[in-house]
Image 1: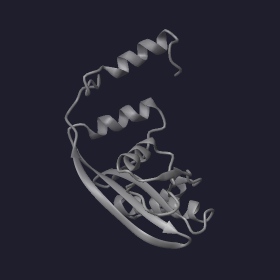
Image 2: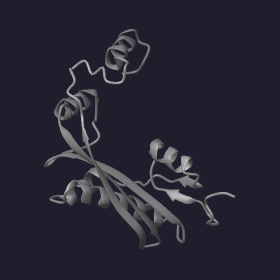
Image 3: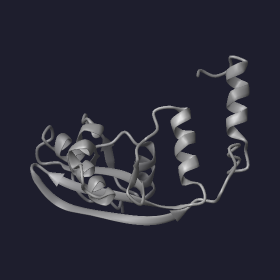
Image 4: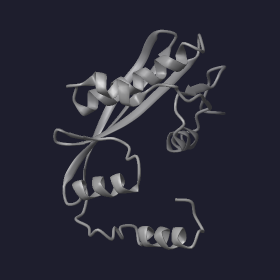
Length: 165
């Protein structure tokens, strides 16, 4: 017997491959309809909200945007924010910014806030936010963390025109 019992699949308002894999591994039937929202604008409007509340606001905005186009369907919006104290981190725009963020996090504890909202029409059926405190090991600028010196490999591949970048 399948886990998902509703007549129509859950709608995931995200293009996140990781979220799709999580739902699939849980045995849920779903379809993907990425929300077309300006996340940075919503974060700016969040202003003084803490990072957890900001994640919740983003999850709700994604679910609301897609739910408006699919009346009667359950729409799941999700988002994550990361902060170290009062400092918030957004998705890095490039490799240099990613390296800068890693340097700011190394050897320190930060919080990852994962939020979701399930919306049907204009009604929030369920929402939650869960937070985890993570401590990153102190690491060198060479960033050999997972057993593969990825940055030097990518530099070699770029230098030899084997990858774009």
